[in-house]
Length: 266
Image (tube, rainbow, N blue to C red; front, side):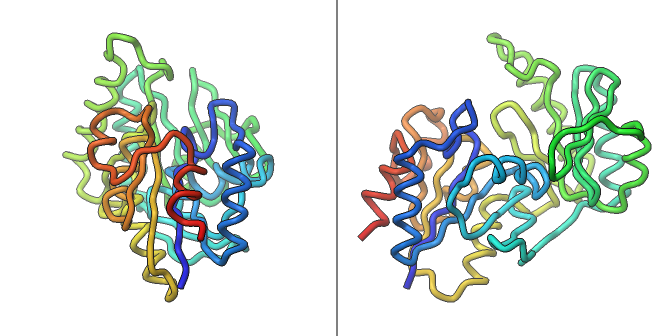
C-alpha cells in the first residue's frame, strides 16, 4: 500500500521567487522512489499551472486543480472535471467588475483572459500574450468556465486590511447571489469554483480513484487549504501560517521536507 501527499503550490512548495528548494525536491523524489504518490493541489487551473511546470521540474504524479474541480495525471489524462456554466460564469464576472477596484480573470478552453486597467491579456499554455479580442468578447465566446478569479487592484493588501475586507465583501455577494458556485480565499485572491468543490473534495475524489492508498497527507498555508487539511489523515501547515489554520492542523512544520522525512519515508 502507498501513501499520498497533497501539497499546495504557492507559499508551500514554491517560495515567493517561484522556486522549489533542493531539500523539498530531493525528499519528493525519494517518496516516488519508494512507491508513494505526490499530488499538487492548487487553486490554479490546467493552463495557469503549465508555465510553472515547464519552468520548474516539480516531482508529481497527479494534479488536483481549480480547487478540486479538475484532476489529471502526470501524462495529462483527465480523471475528473466539473465546470461553471456559461450563464453563471458570465454573471459572476459581471458582478465582480461592477466593483471598480476589482480585477477579474477566468479560464475557458482557449486560455485565461485577465482585464487590467482596461487592457486584455490572455494566459495560454506557452505564456501570457496580448489578445486581439477584448475581455468581454472572450467572455461571450466562452461556452464553459474551468474557474473564475478576482482580486483587489492593490494585490499586496493595505496594512489596515481595507483591501482584503473589500474582497471578502464581493466574495460574500457572489456566494449569496449564485447557488451554483462557491468562493475560496487564497491569500490575495478569491477563486470561484463550482458549488460543492474544494481542495478537500479533490483529495477525496482522487483517493477514491486510486485503490492502493493507506494514508494521506495534506499540506498548505492558506485558507483555501483548510478543506484538504481537514479531510486528510494527517493535515499539516506551517509555523508561519495564521493561527486559525495552525489550530486545525495535526502537525506544524517549517518546510515540506520535514513532513516527508518525519512521516512518509520509511
